[in-house]
Image (tube, rainbow, N blue to C red; front, side):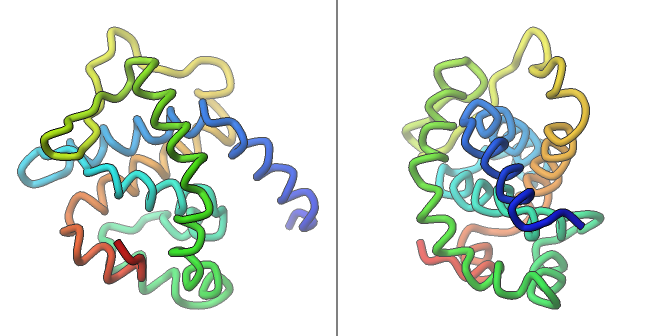
Length: 170
C-alpha cells in the first residue's frame, strides 16, 4: 500500500486536471445512456455525484464487479470506506467547481452537449474515440472503466432512489 502522502500526490495529479474529468464524465454519460431502460441521458446532478465518487479512490475501488447501486452501497458502507461513504454529500459539494470545469471542457471539446429542456448532458457521437497515450493505459484507463461501470449501475436507479441510497441531498 502506498504511503498517505503518495496517495495525496496521485490524487492531486489526477484530479486537478479537469481535462481528465471531462473524459471520465464523457465515458460515464455514454455508459449511462446506453444502459438506461429508456435510453435517457443523465441529468447534470448525476455528473456531480459521479465525480465525487470517481475522485475518491476508496469509493471508486468499491465499484469493481458491482451490478447495481444497492450492491455498491452495501459494499461501500462496510469496512474501511464507511467514513468516505458518509462524507459523499460533502465531497459532492467540495468538488463542485472542479466538476463544473470538467463539464465546461467536455462541452467545449464536443464530447458532451447540453439538453436544456431536460437539464441533462448527452454524449456526442465522435468520429474517433477520445484517448491516446496515457488515456489508453494505466491509471486513466482504469478510472475510465470505473466511470463506465458507475454510469451503467446508476442508469438502473431513479434519481430520488440514487440520492437516498448515496445519502446526497439534492
